[in-house]
Amino acid sequence: MKTCVRCGTPRDPAEFHKDPSRPDGRHPYCVPCRRAYRAALRVDAVARGLINRDHERDKRYRSRYGITAGTVDQLRARQGYRCAICDRHESQLPRGLAVDHDHATGYVRALLCLTCNTAIGLLEENADVLRAAIHYLLRAEELAASVHNET
Image 1 (cartoon, helix red, strand yellow):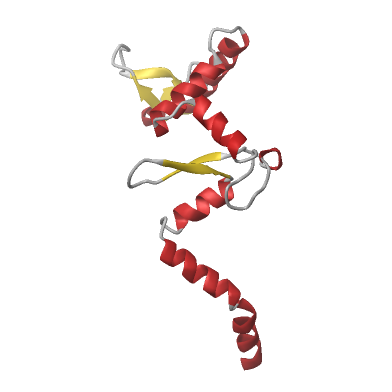
Image 2: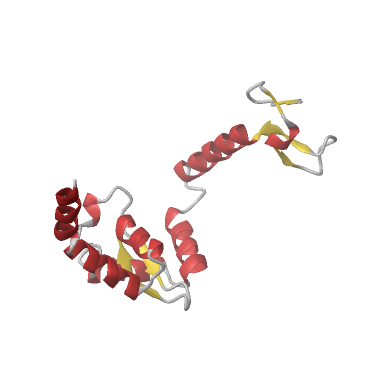
């Protein structure tokens, strides 16, 4: 067992990040404490102006999708700040709009709410499966009636 220097909790050594510079090869803070500590440092750095949020946002979009934050802002304006599928405004969404991209080509398609983006992913971006789901939903009343008539 190893005791976390920050919280004082004895834990399995596997619950500490590896750190070859330490005598025991493990960081002195347990994983939860280290995450909390690093998050607090980041919040403090942002508050003190040491980290530029716009730069970080731009860096994230460039690395994930190959586009700039400016491009995302242009897409938001072009779409009227609404999901390209369900038309909900981003102010109604707890997490705003997400970048939807084709996983095969990497090309960005549009901005979607988390629900619509997740639905497309769960349907494996397959239009045939989506059409089948639409057909199923259109027949839902008929299917429900047939199940209730059997009982």
